[in-house]
Image (cartoon, one colour):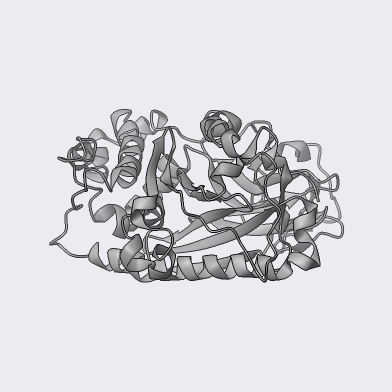
Length: 421
C-alpha cells in the first residue's frame, strides 16, 4: 500500500472571483445585508464577553452558499479520500456544497479533481464511481475526455460527419481542474486557488505531533480496507459538528462509558493557528484477549495513554493515539444536514494482519459508539438554532476555549470578505 504522503498538484489556470473582484457585481449595501458584520464583530470579543455565531449562519441557505465560496472555498477543504479510487483509471463523482466535482485517478496513478461538467453544454459527466475503460463520454452529445481532462472527441463538431473543425481547438476546452492536494489519504481542494500551500498550513500540526509520531510516523499509516470506514448522516450544520468535536466539556453527560476512564479532568484544550481540539491523558490502548495493536515506534512509552483530537479548519477532524489514527471528513449537504465520513488508519503493514482483525473491529466499534452518542446533541443544537430566543449563546471562559477559537476563525473569514467588498 502506498505511503500516505502529501501530494501537491500544480495550480490550474482556473479563474474564480475573489471578494475584491465581486465588488463589480455586489454593492456595499447588499454585502452589509448578507454579512451582518456587527454580529460577527462581537464573536471576536474576549471569550467572557463574546457570543457565538448567530442562528442564520446555521439555518439559511444564503449563508451556506456564502461559506462555500468564502470560508471553505478560500481554504483547503476535504472532498474525499484517495483510497476510494482503488485503481488507476478510476473516477468518483462527489458533490461539494452544490458543486458537482470529479475525483479522477489517471492511468499513471495521479489523483486530480475536476469540475464534473462537460465543457460543451454543462451536462454533468459522471454519475457513478467506477473504472473508465477508455474515455469519459458525455451522455448528451458524446464529447469525450481522457483521464487527464483533455478533450479528445467532438462528434460532428464541424457538421455532419465532420468530427474536427479548424475553428475549434480541442485543447482549449478540456475539463476544468481545481487546485488539489493529498495528505493522510484525504483529497483537498482550494476553490479560490490562492490559499497557502497545504503543507504550510499543516506544518504547525505535523510539527506538534512529531513528539508522538517522530518525523516519519505519518508514512506508517495504513488504511483498513474492509471495516475501516463508516459514514454517519446527522441533521445539523457542519459547524456544529466541528464545535462538538473540539471540546470535552460535554463528556460526563454525553459519553458516560468513555467518561468512566477518560474523565473531564483528564483532558486539556488545544488551540493554535487553524486548529482546535482537545487532548486526553487517559486513552486506553486497544486490548482484545491480550492482543495489542502495533504502536508508533517513536511514541514515548511514558505517554502511551496520551491522545489528541484536533479539528483542522474548515472540515476535517483528526485523532491520533499510540496504536491508531483516524480522519473524518465533514461533508456539508445543506444548512441542516452533514455527512461524517470516518476513516481509520493503523501502524504499518503488520497491523493489517488477520491476527489483529478483532482488535481493529473493537477500535471501530468504540468510535461508532462515541460518534453515535454525539448525534442527539448536535441535532438538538441545530433545532435550537431556529429559536428566536437564542442569539449565539455564551461561552465558558475555560471550557469553551476551542469552540470560541473556531467561532472567531469563521467570523474572521466572513469579515475579511465583507471588508473587501
